[in-house]
Amino acid sequence: MEERERRLNNRRQNSSRSCQEMSKKLIQKRLPIFSWLPLYKLTDLTADIIAGITVGLTVVPQSMAYAAIAGLSPEYGLYSSYIGCFLYVILGSCKQVTIGPTAVMGLLTFETCGNDFPSCAILTGFYSGIFELLMAVLQLGWVVSFISESVVTGFTAAAACTIIASQGKNLLGISGPKGSGFVGYWYAIFRDISTMRLGDCCMGITSFILVLLLRKLKDYKHPKSPRKKLIDTACWLISVSRNVIIIVITSFIAFLWANPPFKLTGTVKGGFPTVDFPSFGLPINSTGSDDDSQRLTYWETWSVIGAGPLIVALISVLQNVAISKAFGSGQTIDATQEMFALGTASILGSFFSSIPISGSFSRSAVNEASGVRSPMGGLFTGVLVLFSLVFLADSFYYIPKSSLAAVIIAAVMFMIEYEALPVMWRVNKLDAVFCLVTYICALMLGMEYGIMIGVATSLAVLLIKLLKPQLNTQVYTDEYLKVKYVFVRPDPGINFPSVDHIRTSITKLLRKYQEINIIAVNFEKWPTFDYTAITALISLAKLFKKEGKVLIFVNLSAEWEEALAAAGLSDILCCAEIELIDYVRKTGAIEGLANKSNNVDYEEELTIVTKKYPADFQSSFEYGTTNEMAPSIEIGKPLL
Picture (cartoon, rainbow, N blue to C red):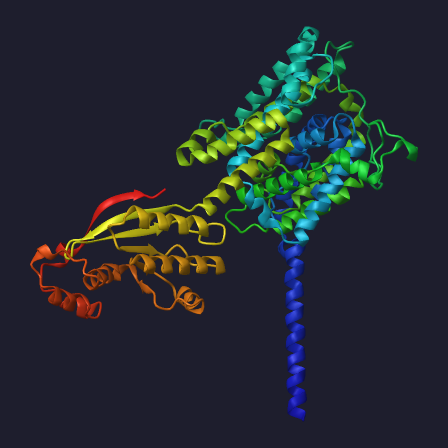
């Protein structure tokens, strides 16, 4: 009795210890801060402070510019730039990633909500977070795998071109309605070109050129000297801070100019944003109203935002996973955790007037180059953004719209990976087609339609390949017995969608090569099967038997044999590929297919080829050598 109680206690202790270990692993997996914080050092803190402030100098002007892409005033970009940074410190799995507004998120928000509709943009961010959290709970990280790299390249290039077109009027100081979509933006530019202002044009083009020149400064390497390291570091810091430098200089010029000849950003609401629930019933017009009768119902609101939040969620997750993979130094990226972090940041951010957010590749690259040691760097980036909101909002009034547009254009133009298209064409022409289809549809029809059509096209082609796997066929002739046989090497994939195609193709082979009595099918690339495939093979075997032909299954696994036997097909010819020629000779002799002109007696021939393989069969060769008896290829071309 005591022994039994002792064993039960041991089991309880082991079970309790196991539960504790599992709970600890789960907490560390879903709250990664508990993995790296116990190992955090003072030297790590110093490096994170430097990296966080450096990224902050980039994110402040960028966030205001990206708010303009979303059709909102600059403060909404700042509202969206700190909550994600704070939360990613706790939930982030990649130290380089910085969360906040991006050009693509701004464009998708604008296409969902239109111009100057903040309540819609905030609600879109909230619902995109819900979708991201739902995907995380259901562990749907694999969904982003269906969006191929070629589709992403086309989508990103289209987004960059659309953003550049959207900023054309601000860059050149052109007045009039902005237009909508890539074609609409260019139409509005040429329609109102007569209203172009010289001051804005000069300021915008000059700012654009200076941003590009400062961008190249980071590549400058000073000749060897005692001050080389200091000069190289200074050049790099100036280069990564180019946006804020241009904004500060042009704002200072505008401040000194009594009546500047270029348009200014205007009043930017400073201070901490109002903390409130997002409005689930949007106002009828974008200016908003506190009167419930002037608001849309819940379902009417969904008819306005449509599939926008879902598209935003998918692209956001895709961007974050891509950035994590790029900077993760080969480590395995947990897409579910990235969804969890993004979803939490988007939902909580919407309570602080945040628009849709995601990881930023450019700011993450700055973070990496600044020597960030942990996600703690995001804390100092967020603090700098809050500092700007509280103390610097009044100075944002003097930012010229043309210089802000120049910063945007200079940032997104490098998202167009034109050099990738020739590589795609050489590697796989279909990938180039997917890229171009996505790019053209996104420009002509809108970003959400472009990504959906691109994904649908690539998946449709993939499905067609699964439906119609290629059967590569070759006709061989055994030089010893002069027996011909067809060897079929199919591509992977025998399942219920492709069974009819495979069965029809092999039947066509039977009709095409009527003078050949032996067809061998290689099962090496068919490791799995289903009931439909089994029944199709049984019907093929019956057809061959009825026609007096021989069907040989090559490299058939034990699972296949058991499944065929269970379905009633036990008398099958199967062998390894190395044994195939011997099975062909045996079958050819038994069926009387040997060429009688070789002066070998049929009985003697039958005795030779029916001995046990491989040792006995090989030792029974009385005529010629192995090389002389090897099969020769007569025809070598795919059936399809």
